[in-house]
View 1 (spheres, rainbow, N blue to C red):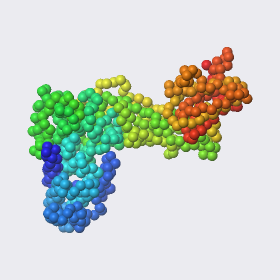
View 2 (spheres, rainbow, N blue to C red):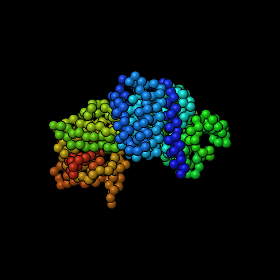
View 3 (cartoon, one colour):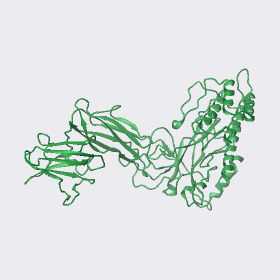
View 4 (cartoon, helix red, strand yellow):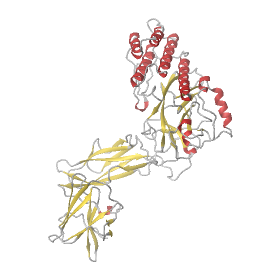
Length: 589
């Protein structure tokens, strides 16, 4: 019963806001300029080039069943007075907003049924009604009337107004007179993944998009708040509300905490018995009571009905909302301001061998992933790929933005000659702070640094010609290590006049024979000189498992022939030919 009452109150708040807008004498005329896209890739419900009365009557008829609701809505529409053939002026706008109010009330009451088709019809009808009275139609994103979305309108003459989504997990309070022009406010929930904020900081759902149509800068601070979905493993003071300030990675602002609670926000159904609010550093029992009382005095009556219960000491992070003050809207979420740096890692192995043909070379794909410190994928990070040789699909260097999984991939075509080639992947490093810093900034707005603990990494490919593997540098020993991969068989052919030892480099980069009689530094095989029995060796192994081949000369030390990796495709891992001009040159220790 309590949830039903809250949903009803939320609907009444929207209704009140819409009715307030009808009193404004400041219309926004229809612009001849094309509509700008809604933020966050949201779908835009754009009006037709003209909005005749017959078309709107058809929209109302298609939305409703025969009966009193259809009759009432059609009558309200027909009551919008024309003036010299044009539907303009205060009277027409008043009746249009009254009709929009009735449409939203019927929608929230479930009188149109449910589903995305009904939502689309309602949004399109509202857009057409704005067009009909020569007001610029709002661009209403998908989800505005969804399960956890809310719409309202404020004007320069509106009293302080609070809008809360039906779950009461997101809300905003707009002070009286803060809207510079009549503005439609939309709050809608965003997916939990990927996090929408352009930051390397840890970010936590819930995420909501707060939109203003037209996009405005409010003349006074508005107070926004969001509930966290989960218990957060972070210190109370480190959690702040943040929002995007632009489309690029790093365009983010951490917001100051408000003095007191966010009206309309209630996180009590997210777990735990205690409730609370992460606003200013004050708490009930200190100086918070006066701030709370002041907020209650200035709220409009219907907004007051949405206030949460009195505060108690917070013990469960999942029941505490996080608030902030701002003058601009965009996607909002909760961040841990001490959680830099993020992480850049490889999805593909660092070292591979690929088959190359003299006609076309070989084309491979290389992928990196960007994550925050708690391993949450970060979307929208610009990764710059630079090829040492060969070509990238799109040119080199090439910048690829990470996707919703935090991944960025590039297609790399190698030269046609078998050799060793490198590809570098790097991310921006902006104003790097000390990595061990744990002191969060004070209660002020600030732009956090975009930081990764590894800003660049290299992929290395050894080209193979007709199955004959190319050696990687012996200097990579210790850096190149075994990973996981498909089973293959490699073949070794000693064409030198000396014995050659075959060592496996394990997952720690050590020479190892992990079987009975083996151990660190023990070879898998020792091939005899060319022409002798045992001058070849067949070895079952796995893709990404490196092998290093050496010869020891008495009194001179060890000569390294190279490190070899099996081919990444096919059952045959390739052939290693030692000698016959294939060695890279002596490396003695």
